[in-house]
Image (cartoon, rainbow, N blue to C red; front, side, top):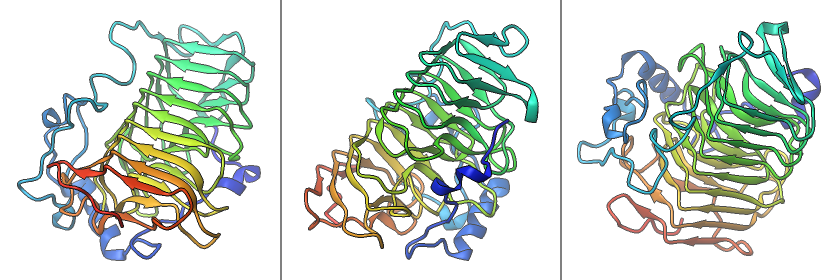
Length: 346
C-alpha cells in the first residue's frame, strides 16, 4: 500500500481534539477500552447496516436509555450506499491487473496506481489503496479494503482535479490495529472539484479529509481507533474554496474529536455549507471553523439532525464548538435534535 511519505507532510495533522483543543486522557482511555469491552449497538437498529456496525463504548460514552438509535428515513445507511446491489465485482489483481489509465503495483503490499486522465475504475474488488494522480478520474461500485495501521489511506488524491468517488465501499480490516488512517484523503490539500458521493466508509479513524468539493450521501460509521488517534467523520484543516457537506450520516461512537471538524490547522475556514446531515458522537459533534488563524466566514450550518444515540449532549461535551455566529456570512439555522427540539445557536 502507499502511505504518507515525507513530501506529503504539509497537509497532514494527527492532533486529537477535545473541548479545549485536545482530548482528555480519561476520554482516550475510555474510548480505547470500548473497543474491547463494550456491548454492541444493535446493527438492526442502524437501518440494516452491515455486520460489525457501530458499537457503544464504556460507561464514559454510554447513550441514555431513551435515546433513539435508528437512522431516520431520508438519510444514508447500509442499504443505499456503497457498492450497488447486483454489481458483479472483478478481483484485483487475480482477474484484472490494469486498465486504461491505471495499473496494479505489487510494491508495499499492493495498490492501484491511477495516473491517467479520465480513468474509470468500476466494479472492482481492490485489496489495497487507490492512489490517484490523474484528473477527471471516476471510481464507482468498487470495494476497497486496506490492511490498515499507521497513516494508511483507502483512496488518496495527489494534485488532482475532477475526481469522483461514488457508490463504493472503503474500509480497513478491523477497528483497532487494522483501521485505516484516512478513508479518502487529499494528501497535499490542493485537489479541486472532488466529489465523494453515496459511499459506505468504515473501519477508519478519519473517513474523509478534503478541502473543497462536494461530500454527499455517504454513510460514515463503525470508526476505528488506536490510542494515538484522533477520530473524525469529515474534516478539513483550513481553506477558502467552496466545500459542501450534505445529506450524510456520520456516526462517531468515541468521546473525542468529531463527526464534522472544520479546523484552522493551516489557514482560516470559509465558504463551507453543512446541510441536512444526521450526526452523532465525538467530543463535540461539530467543530465550526473558529481557531487561531483568524475569523471564519460564510460557514452555513443548516437543517442538520443531531442524535443522542451515544451521548446525552450529542457529543461527549455538546453538539457544537468553535462556531462564530457573528462572523460574516455565518449561518446557524434549522438544526434540531432527533426529537425535533431546536439545537440553539452556540
